[in-house]
Image (cartoon, rainbow, N blue to C red; front, side):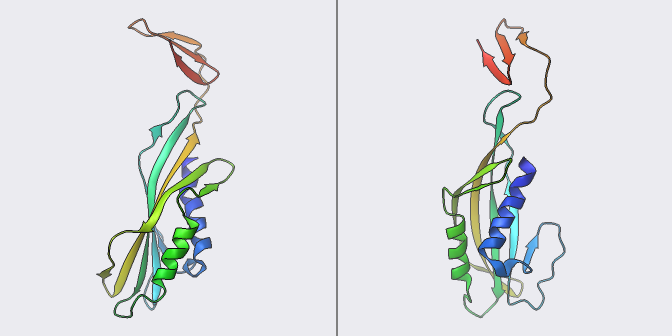
Length: 165
């Protein structure tokens, strides 16, 4: 299911960098970085789904990215940033798969995106993780077995597949 993509990626992120467990800002959750020398932002940025296969038992293709921002105190060097980036690249290597009983997610790429930059009193490095997943649709079972469109093209709806002839 689409709603399971973000938690699956979040779980893999936290397993890759255990120190991120209580030091990460997640969307719409309270977080205060005050007093932290290093902390993270996990941003889940999905694209709109695309049709992968037709029919009530078909699937949709979901793509998108996760941006992990690694924030460290400004003016103190890279302080473990490179090792965090490597851990993320190892965990989310291109072709890596993350699964649960409802979905199979594949990583397309992972790497540092752009130069570091100063944000408030921190210096920020960003890592982008690009993913794709196919998720089976759960449509209501339709009682239609055969439909004739206005232009005379017949459409057979059988066993969840849409066949044009």
